[in-house]
Image (cartoon, rainbow, N blue to C red):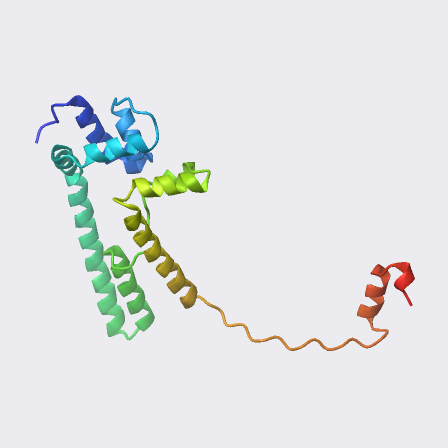
Length: 198
């Protein structure tokens, strides 16, 4: 597919492909492509509308295809290497190494996620108030219900993490009463007002 006929659409597609590397939001890509829209929700909506265009989506797919192929080859190669490590470690009955290889392969293939990102990298860094965080969050979802569903998923992940990393604290023994005239009693007496000292 050749470059898009509309130069602003082509520029937008090019910027969307570069956005993760440059830390640009969809709205910033929209503005840098030459569209005159005030920053805020209107710009996010306009960028989202253009991003959903079939022609723009096809062009973006074409632009990222070489990177996707290269990444796929790298992922496949790394997965094969981790399979070899797993097989060797299992054969030598080194279960810790085998477990590590299996865990790394699962992360590599996307079966295990350590964090969820919403929006482009650093997009929430610009938020200074709770309202700005909510507006940014809602700009990336079809509806408030979709945003809440994602937040519920993150809440569940936080609860699971906390449960898996909880530390059991044994109950403390009750404090023993200090003997009259002990060092602690003498130290506390220094801080009492003079009229209460004995």
